[in-house]
Length: 120
Image (cartoon, rainbow, N blue to C red; front, side):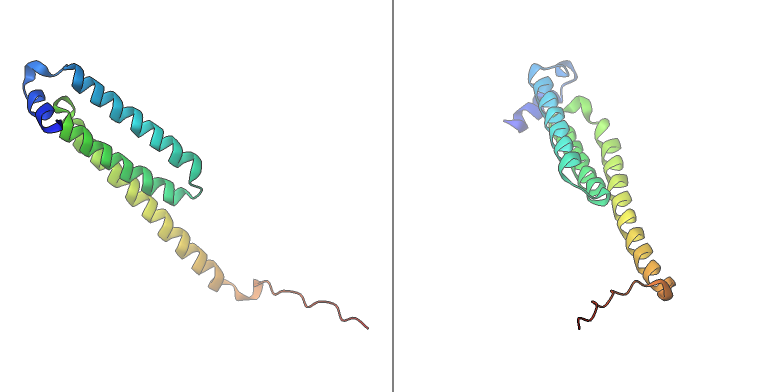
């Protein structure tokens, strides 16, 4: 059905086909719902950026595959998705390097656990 719809929408006269509008609204609503769930449930910023980037790329593929009027929107959304994923990876790597560098930079300030007091 989706292929038949895509073929029908390739005709410029059918750009505002009701089925195309319905798919566009469905994809947009699903995108917003999943993005809201990701932002509420995932705690780390790195994972949020990576998951949102992947979600944006999947939605861009959906827009480009099913909706002829949004074909020009798909490449821009893919670029935004890639930037989000790369940003999440960069934050993850930088926080790892900062943590590793912070532990070895000043070993004199390392916190040692206190021994329990001796009972007599």
